[in-house]
Image 1 (cartoon, rainbow, N blue to C red):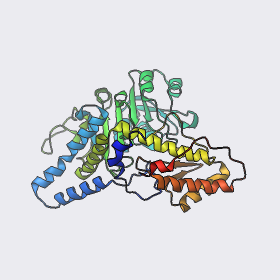
Image 2: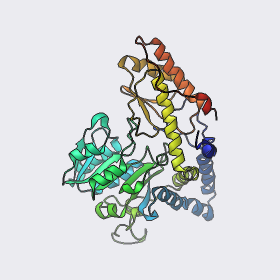
Image 3: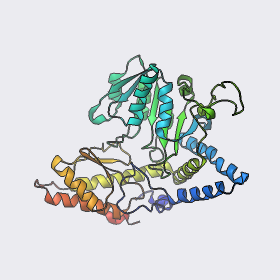
Image 4: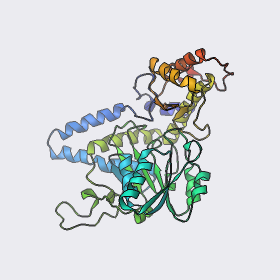
Length: 390
C-alpha cells in the first residue's frame, strides 16, 4: 500500500491489544509518550532546579508543535486541560448568535448554552440537519445577519462525517468559525487557517493521554472573544503584580492557571510523532483502514452510516434493529472493543490497526450474518487481510 513503508516506524509503535477499535473514544498511550512521561516525572522528583525548568520548557515545546500543525503563530496557541476548556473560554467570551447542530457533541452544544444562560450576551441557534451531519447547505439555510459565529466538529463524533471547512469559511464570510478538532487533529489533512478557533485534545488519536488539550485563537478571534475566564496565567505581569492586571494580548489570555508540564510533555511527544511521519500520509492511511472496516461491513450486509466520500477514521455501523444486540454481543465475545451507542456501533481503527484486529471484527460480523434470516447480496468491497500483515 502506498505510503505504508514511510509510516512503518510509527505503525510499529502501536502495541494495543488485538481487537482495539475504539480510538475515537480513547487512544492507548504510545510507547514514546509513556517513556517521556516517566523520564520527566523522574526529573520532577529530583528537586533540582535544572530538572524542574527542563520539564517546564515542555509547555513552549508543545505550543510550538501545535502551531506547526495549525500553521499559525505560536502566540495564537494556548494549552488547555481539555477541548471543553478551550471551547468554554470561547463561548463565554462570544456575543451575538452562534449556530450549532442540535446533535453536536456536548463540548460544543452545552458550553454554548451555558454561556447563553450565564451572561445573556450569546444566543444559541440550533440547526438539525439530516443525520446530524453539518453541511454547507444546512448552515446556509440558517444563516442570518445576526449570526456572528458558526461552531462545528471537523469530524462528527457520531457518524465520522468530515465537515467542509473551506466551504464553510467561504459561506460565512467574516463571521467566526469555531472548530472542535478532537476527532481530527493530527490525523486529518486540512487547511486549519479556515478556522478562527481550533480546540482539541491529544487523548484520542494522538495517544497522549488526558489533560493534553490546546486551543488556537486567531487575531480576529481575539478581537471578538472577550477573555472572560482569564486567570493568573492569562494576565499581564506576575503574581507580585498588584491591582487587576489586564489580560495578555496573546492566546494565553484564555487560560486560568499555569499548564501542567507533564501533560505538555506528553502532547509534545505525540504531536512530534505525527509531524515526523507526515500528517498527509497518516490521514491517507487512516482513511484506508476505515475503508477496510467499511468493506467488511459491506461483505456481511451491515449498513454504514458514515459518508463514504467525506470521512476520517470513524466508521459508524447502523445494523438492522434485530441485528443490533446480537452484533454488540458478538463483538464483545470476539474481543473487539468499539463504542455501541443507541442503534449505532462506532468502529474506529487507527493506522496501526492490523490484520488480527480486522479478522476479529470480520469474525464477529460473520457470526451475526450466519444467523440472519434475510439473504445477503454479494459483497461490494473486498479486503485483503494478507496485505495488512505488516
